[in-house]
Length: 332
Image (tube, rainbow, N blue to C red; front, top):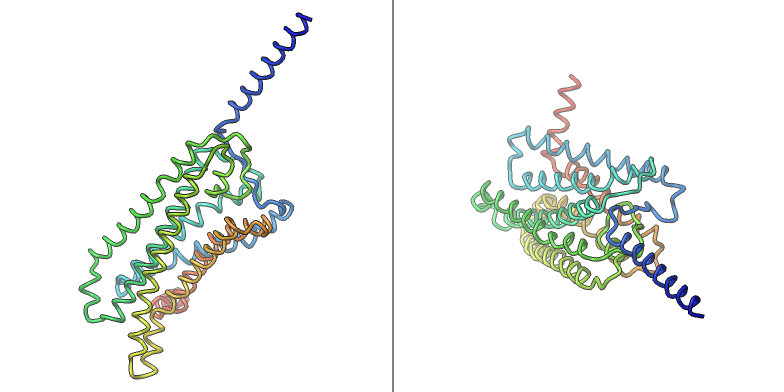
């Protein structure tokens, strides 16, 4: 009986030490596995075709905007400076996810280093906040141009535009800085599989075997602070703009003035609506199929960057004219 008792105690100790070693080995894994689009793994190659097409259009369109504004001195105005900032932000956002997404779809390269995962998450979140700030700056530019046109050039000087741009960038950098630090401090011992094509913040911290309330509350606070305040300022700006437009005596003048800010309104809708839908389905849409939530989250990073240069190119006469001149000169 003593021998049996001794053997049981030794076996218990061996089992305990092995399980403890395994959990210690798995805590804070060096790599995570990006699953891609769960449930649609067989169609990954086909899904990559429209995604790759949208990315190519986004790259071509945004670089065209940057090239035209740089080459044309008449476009060196606050509105186009902000448009260039938006184009750069869209390029960074789409490039942050698509190369890794294609490596998953084409080469089954699903592993991502923990530090690289946190870096990708940081770039995605910070540049989303930066893009939101740029949309507010563009709304302010339209407000001054329509409601106080005589003082537009004196209010929005190059120096002021540079200050606004720096403030927008610093806000995005500083507000998102706690995200990776908080995510790194949690112990990860459940699984290292992320059901997405990129390191989405909530999907990552949900893998932690700890109370992640701090990360969750901070994420919600920043989302409501950024989206709430930015949408509020945009709404106030456009309320004043619409009041100024409807006070114009002639109908053709009202239409022409409204046309100057219609492209910005379209860009706002293209940017905020997909993001809000993706955010709400990710957090609260538990009845929505996982593959639909992941698809929506990925579409947000490709559709607005693709649409923004098309919207501005089609609706802004100066950009359209300059683009036609470039093709005309090349043709002759």
